[in-house]
Length: 186
Image (tube, rainbow, N blue to C red; front, top):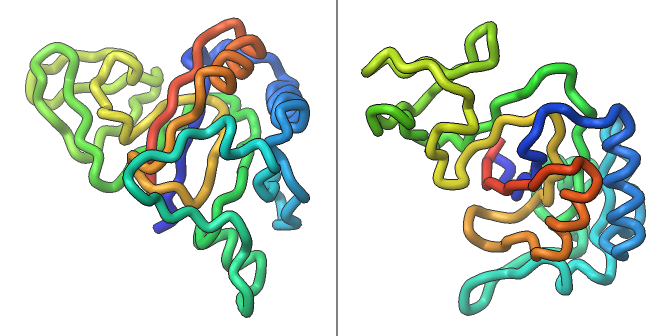
């Protein structure tokens, strides 16, 4: 499973050109390096300002910033063997992304559920109490997210790094709403 830090807007009302705006912001902040040619995906190596904009936590975090030698770039990127950026497309409907160990809690009764799914209206239903609510109301402990767009920092494990306030503020300016972050393994 590939670990990743997901940044995502809190709103689902997004401009159609959001992926292009995010790319422009990352370039302006010197967060993007060379593009990674993977079929159908927008990925980039990390730029020189990564360590200024992302805070790495712990005594001695181990983050690989360069692709490993002796392995194809595509397979190393897909497996998350080094830190790089991935931008998803702008999805027509919100998508729920969960870490396999996530057990979000119902906002009404507090019961945790290991495998919640969105219903046809984009809401989550609590099997314990019957409460229906938007995914944003559930308590995820940063192990899940529901959004129409994700900016991913691939190769980052849960709790290993957090996006800096300046980056989150820059992203928020693109959507007129705050951005959140979560950790998942896909």
